[in-house]
Image (cartoon, rainbow, N blue to C red; front, side, top):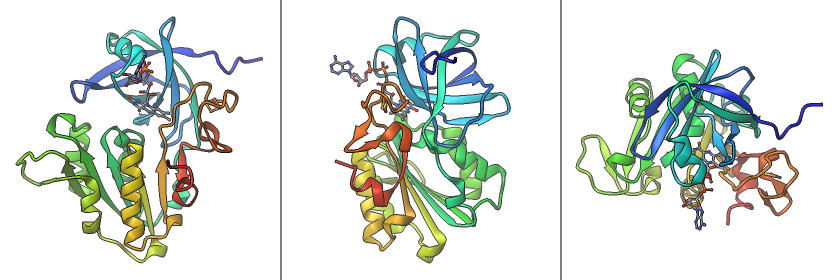
Length: 263
Ligand SMILES: Cc1cc2nc3c(=O)[nH]c(=O)nc-3n(C[C@H](O)[C@H](O)[C@H](O)COP(=O)(O)OP(=O)(O)OC[C@H]3O[C@@H](n4cnc5c(N)ncnc54)[C@H](O)[C@@H]3O)c2cc1C
Ligand code: FES
């Protein structure tokens, strides 16, 4: 019988430096994956952590990792050709049937952009998946912007608003918190709309709140949680909020449910 806790080694194919503290690792892949799912990534004798899949294609996937602690700092010492240990994928991911043919708005803060990047790239490549896609991204300052090369590409096809918390004087960039700019997002008839809000908990709470304030029904909004996890298999309870196992039922939740889970 397969041991679900046992990770498998995969070669690192390439590493891209997004910022000083965020690198994207491209790995081999031999399993199915859905937009917004995550993997349990580990190094022997160091540790294990959940990391979102930030893009994928035939035989490969990417994960964008911020160096914050024991495991992620050691992962940053790896080079192409080294192996990373992986089990998964886990979580529900985004249910595309909720967004097909709709006016989709994605509001992402900081590394929250990672779990939606593969979906945006899919919509970019395969025009006609949604009726319209509008993007609203918030970062702290110019050096914290990730996926610069993708954002430049997305701007060609989608209305894209970039906001920086700190004043920067950059052309085409708005200054201030992402929440201040929800009022500038175009809305359609709510029946034909879907909104995804993704980022740190406080950003999700206030950004989703701004959309609700503008009349968007909670049922038309989705969020994704980065809740502390351990097993990712519904066994240990680390991810539990009230009776909800985020690793099994999430990390993507409809806001009508998530609003009761956000602190
Ligand atoms: C579903 C999901 C998806 C995720 N996706 C991503 C992703 O795509 N990219 C990404 O970079 N991260 C992602 N994360 C977050 C990532 O799993 C965590 O940052 C993870 O803890 C990193 O592991 P680590 O061992 O490197 O850090 P840890 O050692 O666990 O440290 C994590 C944080 O705790 C602090 N800390 C550690 N030890 C102590 C201590 N003794 N006292 C006080 N503070 C301490 C560290 O400074 C750091 O800020 C995701 C999490 C979830 C749940
Ligand atoms: S992480 Fe163990 S139950 Fe969800």
